[in-house]
Length: 501
Image (cartoon, rainbow, N blue to C red):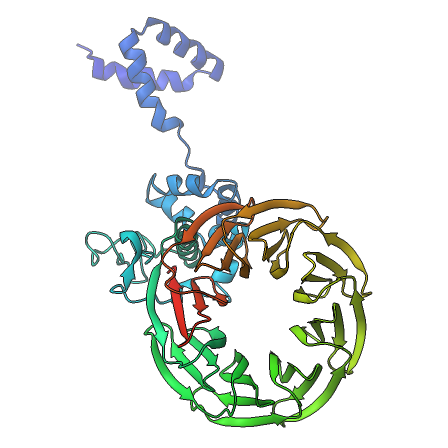
């Protein structure tokens, strides 16, 4: 007797011999004879056969291109599907693209967040919210997870690619700034008088004071590494670069120190008044003094190469970019100098009171004055292209990026402007003078009277958070991607560090 099992191979063989049109007719007839439960089972059996994993048949370059059209959230969801898709989503090319879109490439080049050391976890933690980055879900080169419930467990997955880790760290850092997650490091104490100037590079902070000393600090340990006691007057300005400290002093001298040994390797003499401003450009030092002159020095040999004169009142601000220097003064002018040829290229007249602040590049100069005006000048021809009106008191600080100009004023407001001269936002959170301002990508940090530091979104002027626990007044502020450092105008001088990492 012929059984069902005997007939089944014959039916399959007969089906194979049919043409495609005949096969379609047979299938249509069979489907019409099936009951609903049979149709449901058939669909369930067909679903995995119809699914196609495109990653299995496409080259990696094309997979990266396809995945680049997904949002970061979608890429993370895709990575949860299976091990293969996780590896496709774990691509340096893909995450480099997403870092580029967010303006975070410098976190993997100039400032490597993977090497950034967090401050000690036993430091004061604001509102029980730690800014410290945890390593959950990051797999290292040995295939071991760096965090989570079992920090030593092994994984069969490939290591988290470098640019994905950078994106994760940068995203965490951006949330710290937005949500106000920071730590207050113990104040740096040691100066007997007011801190007049400071600069930082890496983990090293250098501060100068009216007590005639310069102190070198390790910002990770809050320890004073060395004290430089070689000045005969108040230290009025300083710059830190490539292991060297350049200081200006009320005793009319500039000095160059080795940061490691604290040894004075050059003493530059020539100014007839207090040296109030200094910039370090390659092997040139540019200084401005109360004698109303600007001098250009070659620090390796200690020679004064150029003396630039022209201001008729005290110089208020000095900035250097490539072969040009810009100075502002109480004589209401802005002057553009060629520091190599020793000539004044332009005298910019337009402010009616002293010019308090300035920033420039190859294309534009932006100045802020005691008349409450901000002016945009053409660097090449020295012509004022825009005047920004809105502040009702002195403009003390400004900064700009490719999208906006930010300004702070004695009228207690911070304003955002576009390059057409239109005021985009008026931000009111400060009480008293807005003295310091720093713009970094889309983050704006402002400091003012009453101990107040405010973090804003520079795209829309939105208030992100107020630093309520700043322990001192401030008159100087220095910011990096991960820290705010502020100096108090009071004596004895202190420096406070707020860490967002």
